Length: 196
Length: 207
Image 1 (cartoon, rainbow over the protein chains, first blue to last red):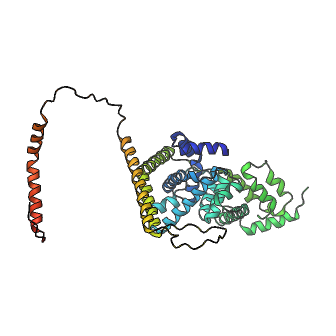
Image 2: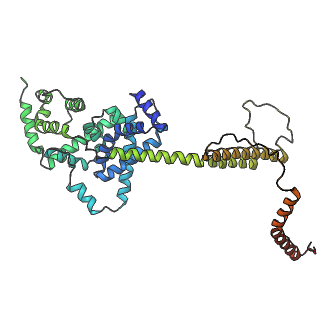
């Protein structure tokens, strides 16, 4: 894969339009998906996705060809999202933006629980949300996520565990899962059962 | 939720879980057995967390933006590259001339008798600066000529055949005509110089 990546990057650096299109096509889904989930705003996500690719191509010469390309691209995406969120927090939010983020969930969701998970995700810390989306939505492995976030694998595992925990808590509070008291009863009952 | 086996199940989740994996595990784990309904719900919901659909034409827009940026940066580098190099070289030259040439100290200390004229004299420095300036100007001239040449289409060799026939007009007559044509200009220039000399407090008489 690295050899393919290196070849593609070399063609991109020489200004080959087809290669640039290929690189965009290969990563745009993951980059845009992450931007939508982190920014909760499709238009902003589109803008940031474009910014991410501009930055990718501007700094392509600095890419270390001994490392895979995808985590490098995703790390730029995570950093751009962070910067965009910081800039947005300094700007006054307009009413349209709030309506879009709260009232209209993405149209690709199916099922109430999935919708609830999406909403609960929005309340998580940025790091938890990022690892959750990369792991469960994009199917990336721990190693890949760790490289994207420039964090040890252990940290990524911890963040993912906490993300799931908080998610379950939030779902329980919203009545999507049985409350804790019932679980305690169930646990006591289950403790008395013996496997056959 | 802290059950390591359950964590392992979730870790394997992107690669796909075998059917009934949770139920199998819950048979021997009281904590997971108690939480089985919610864990089951979560396991059922997670595969439906799919990435959002891409907006139509996003790829084309991004590719076009990247290509435009690539072209802009290339033309900027082509246009301003020599200028930046020239400014950098001039700055370097200025630093060298200002501070003088200071050779780095040798790693092995050698006892050398102190010579008073160890540093280059002002004349040498000026000469070096002049030579460097000449080289710089020559290089800039070559660059400029190359850039100018790239603006015009290539032209093949032009053969000029000398006119061996008789002259159309005698040389003296041509010179008189040129002088007559320049007369208004030279008269004005002479008048201006006379006025200038008259105003100078040197006592010079206008010619």
